[in-house]
Image (cartoon, rainbow, N blue to C red; front, side):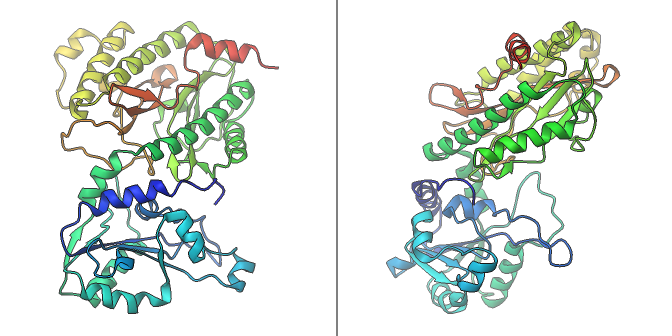
Length: 432
């Protein structure tokens, strides 16, 4: 791992919060991700499964966490199973965690090697009635690949068919939605790394550079700050490319007179930052670009003010739609007649602002959360990202910040990244 060690108290707290939700005589199991093959002997870079990381901080393959609050033996209330390191692995791959290092990372004292899994689990399973499993539920999940979790869940059920199996998802959705103080601190580091990348870009962007040049500049800065890189595939869309919501080719030149939309965030310690900004290639907004940009910025600022304890996500999105409707009428893109005749299931503003405004953010970019009408709570972290996309003008503008809900309102983790027109132009005018 490249990032500096995180405070193990983060993971101790998360396990305690989760353990408190389990029914009596229950244990819960969390598996790492596989290392995925490409071809021949190639593999993709390892990315840890977010649940086991959130619970333990262990950031390596072939790892298992068992949480068993009612275990008869105190040492079995929390157990890690790890791949045993050895001299051969150390030479070819780099040494894996030893037991002392695993404790330092996770705060878990009981660590077994994976070869002890069957022996230890026979004992633990004889002492429990219910087993909570990660069932990989997410509103956006669409994965045809059988994961390590799915494969090992199946094997466990075959080995122990008479136990009661339950889903960890309801508890994880509620718990992971609310960040601890330690988690917010890590997310602020991710935001600061991201801000450094945007500062670099503001001083680099000029006519003739390419979208991939800009991507490379971000990556350079992120790696310098001990990030492993992008929290998600970066979107760097110049001109009309900005109107493609998930444009990831990043292979076109940036032309004088165009805007570039950057949807780019760094990852730090597995926690994600998610930011969008739009900058003029030549350093100056045209009157029309400025007009549309400031309309989006007004919506974003007003939407951020709506992110407070007690707010309901569904109602919030309706309110933002009303804000956007007013701006689009002012820009001449829709009329009041369009609004009066709109289909409530797809309001008139959706022609130019077709995506949602906010999603949960955390270990996953689209993090776990509650979409059941529950009110926003202190500690939840949301993106706020309104946009206006006008394909016929080759103009797409989105502005996005990361917002932590606090007791009194909110804080903006990404406020250091310029978004006022005058500030952006002044920085770009001062480039060497």
